Image 1 (cartoon, rainbow, N blue to C red):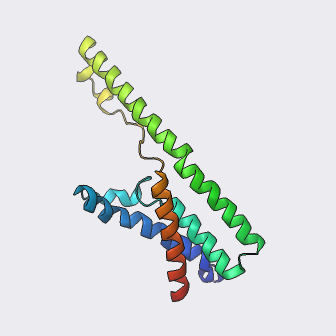
Image 2: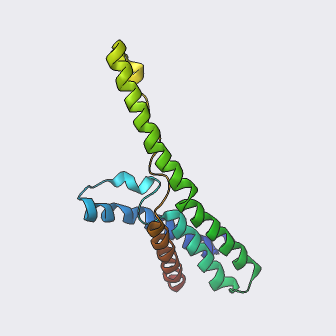
Length: 157
C-alpha cells in the first residue's frame, strides 16, 4: 500500500495526464481542429515528458528536500529528458518529415512509371512518425505545468 502513498509518483502521473489531455483543447483553440487522438500521441504543446519529470523532481524536492541526493538525481534526470525532448527527438521528427516526402516522391515516380498504384501492398505503407520531439517552448511549458501540478497534487495529498 506504500505504492499508493508515493506523492512524487502521483504528481508525475497527474502531470502526464494533464499535459496529454490539455493538448486537445489547445489544438482546437489554435487551429480549430478537434483531434482527441492527441491525448495518446507524442510531441505537441505542452511536453508531457517535461511535465512528468518536472512534477517528479518537484515532488521529490517537496518530500525529501532540495538538498537530498534523490532531488539531485531527479533534477539531472529531468534536465536530460527535457534536453532530449527538444533536441534529439525533435531532430528525428524533422528527419521523418524529409524521409516521408522522399518516400512519397519515389512512390509517385514508381506509380507513374510502372502502374504500381493498383497494387494493394503499396497502399498499406505506413509513414514515419513526424511529431516526435518538442519545440523549446513546448518543453518550457511542459516543465512549468509539471511543477504547478506537483504543488497542486501536494495540496490535495
